[in-house]
Image 1 (cartoon, protein in one colour):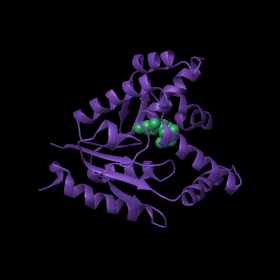
Image 2 (tube, helix red, strand yellow):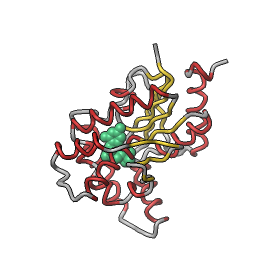
Image 3 (tube, protein in one colour):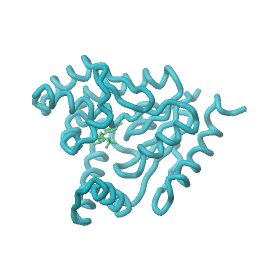
Image 4 (cartoon, protein in one colour):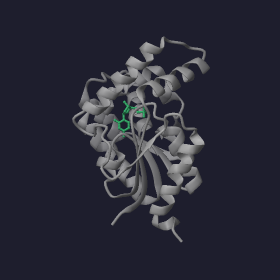
Length: 223
Ligand code: DC
């Protein structure tokens, strides 16, 4: 029996957030950003001045915090932290909670609970493999490292920052390596996922492709 969950996994910079948010909106279901949950734990630990390498403390934070997702936004203890967790410093520190097995266990349990309560479109690295192996519709959204580096550079430039292309590309390759080599919940392409390559495609094309596939697979959307 499959459950009415759409999973979107893939490497950093493949366009998962934009595509998953748009897809959820078109399907009329909730959007869950699981990366933001790991980021929120890093943010709280940072604010508390904790040692982020201390797994026990990190998991205590994860267990004792209220993490919620409402209308696609992430709330930490009632505070909307959607924008705060995107800070560069958090991007740098998130590897600690993401690499801590006990924190992953805590957050995976929470993600499952959210997905069993209502239909969701959820994005991350392990959604189709570990969290929702029975999801009705799985995507693996990817793009070449060069394409992802170009997008990341565009994003930086829009924020008035800049960096050499080679440096941005090297960061992307390094992040891929970290995400793929993690022992628990590594980035893997689910065997039963639909692979969507976003190189040279517009958001509209990508989301259209995903929406058609999702409508065929989600039982409550089939008439
Ligand atoms: O997608 P993102 O950049 O917001 O993810 C932040 C970090 O969390 C990234 O290093 C990968 C990790 N992550 C994870 O390990 N498992 C998930 N389900 C989602 C994100």
